[in-house]
Length: 402
Ligand SMILES: Nc1nc2c(c(=O)[nH]1)N[C@H]1C(S)=C(S)[C@@H](COP(=O)(O)OP(=O)(O)OC[C@H]3O[C@@H](n4cnc5c(N)ncnc54)[C@H](O)[C@@H]3O)O[C@H]1N2
Ligand code: MOO
Image 1 (cartoon, rainbow, N blue to C red):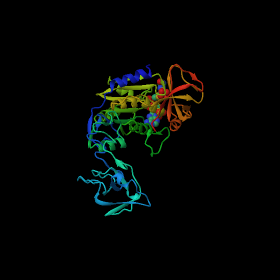
Image 2 (cartoon, rainbow, N blue to C red):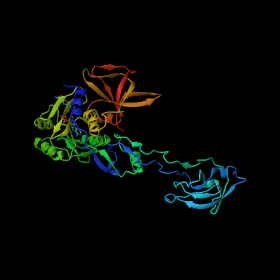
Image 3 (cartoon, rainbow, N blue to C red):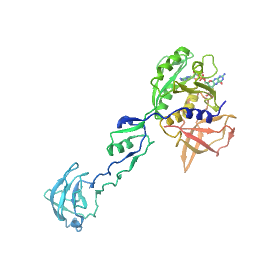
Image 4 (cartoon, rainbow, N blue to C red):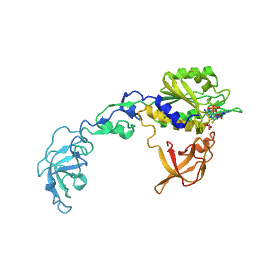
């Protein structure tokens, strides 16, 4: 038997960060940035108007009121995208649109709502201080500033920022391509009729979705029968396109535990009993250099194993620290029991009330009982030396992706 920590260390010591890739911006969505992106110019690049209105000299309209508007000649129109250099002198104004460059000499913008909207002459009925509705060059981002740090996962806002500094492509850690496959003669596809003794396949759906939640690209494979030759063929086929392979089922002590039978023979994938519940039977190794995780078939065991071992490995492959932000300390809302000598992962419901996290067990805890997992948002992690904890104790809790 090995501990959870020993098994995870073995895995994290074996997986490598994926080589960087240069991608067009929208192809990079969800990938992790491998280089800092800096702004080559300030943003905004030039002083410009925040409103549709008139560019003026603030001192000219200092006395403007509704009752006694100030009239100024309008010497031109400046629209967003104008590349010419415009200028005004005191006593003049220029019509200006949002985003258009501020003409030299102007120090305020008056929105059209404060005026009569005149074309040749505009009557302005409110004073404006210098700087009114002017967006200054560099007030968003200064030239040379890092706008997105290396190691950031690229979502909509980050991609927008990178485009805004003029970059069409970025260097990222690619999303790991993970093949997920279940084994078991009893498994049928959802939608098919079940004969006695059969169940619908759920692990590969669940784990393919979990791969995506962990930032990877998941490929769900058709279920493979409990037949050694077919399992080996499937693995060989998938190695060409996978950065990692995840299997479920066939790793305990049964006469048809073919995943273990086949992979144990390769010499590079090793099988262990890990001191945890659920998820005791685990296999991991490199098959022709590709990480292979053989997770137990019980659905909750497979899910917990994924969160505890596979997710940190996929993060490491993306150049991310294994677990940042996923764990919180919470107060137990009820008494709990735990098996001696095993790390116990209880499905839990975590909530945040009046400044504290509290957590309660989410229903029944058998490793075949998906019903309570589907209502959980966290795993309560009880250490090996704990056999019982009273309500009110502090526990570590792993938040589940939502
Ligand atoms: N004599 C022993 N028996 C078992 C031990 C043991 O130490 N000694 N360990 C138990 C534990 S703990 C676990 S966990 C399971 C792991 O078994 P396998 O990985 O070999 O998985 P299977 O036997 O193939 O299946 C277990 C269970 O899960 C259901 N299953 C499997 N795949 C799927 C799927 N894709 N979708 C839905 N459900 C699935 C399967 O029908 C079984 O009910 O072994 C214990 N036994
Ligand atoms: O470890 Mo099994 O995963 O307890 O059901």
